[in-house]
Image (cartoon, rainbow, N blue to C red; front, top):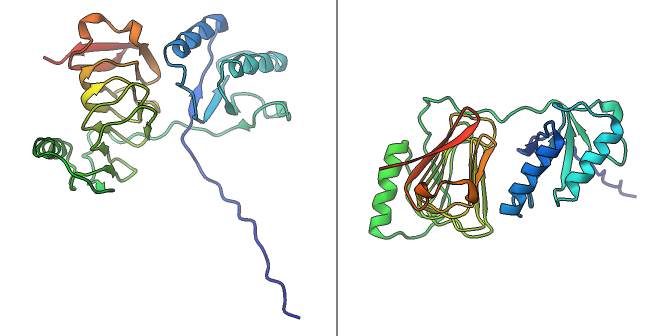
Length: 262
């Protein structure tokens, strides 16, 4: 009889970027801030990989369960837990993770590496001219026509079409440039800076993985939310004198600052 072929189950270690929530004392105040964010952007945590890091808290095991229940009641699905004693692991808790670290950032002065065109399409002459000007400024080569994927170590991500409502763009390795607008309900999350050569109506998050030097630039500000290195402003908190203006936003003394680009 022929010998039955062997079967194998393959296991591999692999790292993925996640969003980490870091609750702080007093927890009542932290939940008030969380509720304010969710009131402004109900879908902010939807379809995201969320880890809760409680290293800044001093909690008993029973208090940890209560904290996680309060977070889950807000519709936030938790995939992992960090900053607790591994001996606390139970079937009722999310997996306890160890050894996590912030996503590495490219050196500040490193030139962008050439990007590779990932799809085809057409642009108007004015859009093509704008692309060439921006590409030259970023040190990027390649024809316009779709989403450009960069070398992971330091390259930018260049989007040559508007970002539509419901779309989420993640690029932990560097800057994101949108040659167009970002619709309400869309979001951009970059490890570096965010550049939007159109109207920003959705959410823009720069320095999302710990880069405090990151900035947000847009031609017209109508944003639902701005965030730099985890510190955010909702639409209600953005001053009226910068609304509908060309702006830059940056982090200064743990506060998001916004200035007009005149």
